[in-house]
Length: 178
Length: 171
Figure 1 (cartoon, chains in turn cyan, orange):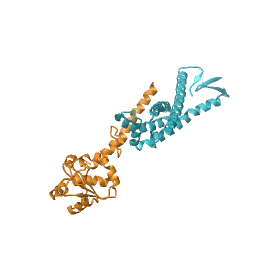
Figure 2 (cartoon, one colour):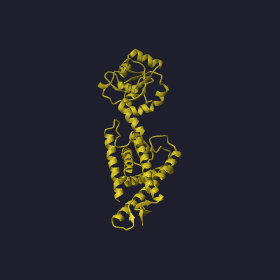
Figure 3 (cartoon, one colour):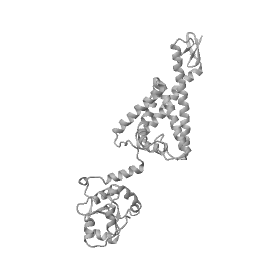
Figure 4 (tube, helix red, strand yellow):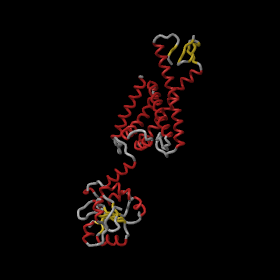
């Protein structure tokens, strides 16, 4: 007798549910991604929260936002990043955390790409302050791609798990939640 | 959609928390962003905005000493009066570092100040009870210039002595 846990096959052996090795990997993959993203976001947020002025200068260097919004972003972004990190650490809020990271990474990516296209050389202030450098901007753009794809992957996995739970609760015979 | 709402809620809470942290910060950010140049201007302006009674006593020099410094060109002389008064007449060799436009004038004269950093600086204003020279002298001391003095007699004493005067555009 088999069933599906988190989209993967399981079978009953001697009255116990045994998951395939692939399933076990996926069960650890999302928490592992979430932990890595949480560490990165808490580190980034903690680095910024001490000196919002530098973040404001870094935001201004992008020449995208008006002066009335720059300081607002500089004050809220570090708290937002730390909050994302904490949400990722708690299983019940992990899904919102992964979505928040995915959306913010997408925004960071768009801002950085626009600066690169316009020929700007700046320090993005992503992890505190540093010297403006275009090679570093490209590196941070790559990092945004990694952050976006990994957080989106984790979000989709968690969304799939929630759908499985919903189906299971509504009486689906062969799928149970992870 | 519920997850997006959650993200928006986190963003709003972060904004509120950010403002609260800023409120109790030792150096809070203003609501509207100021460029580093604007901040420097504001900082320079605030240096010369102290009420006169709160000023520490700046070192002063008398008329003979001031006259010698002017004649030997052994010091940088700054006229702290507003530009229109400077244009009407000033001590020969003096530069206009007006108290009321300190940020602008300081940046205009930064090259001169840097080049003559080893020279003593003497500041004067109208004379009598004027405070502009003391405010400018204290601002310069705060900015790191160590040998700054005030000629308290000011323009009043210099012009009354019948000594040579210069006039014309701000330098």
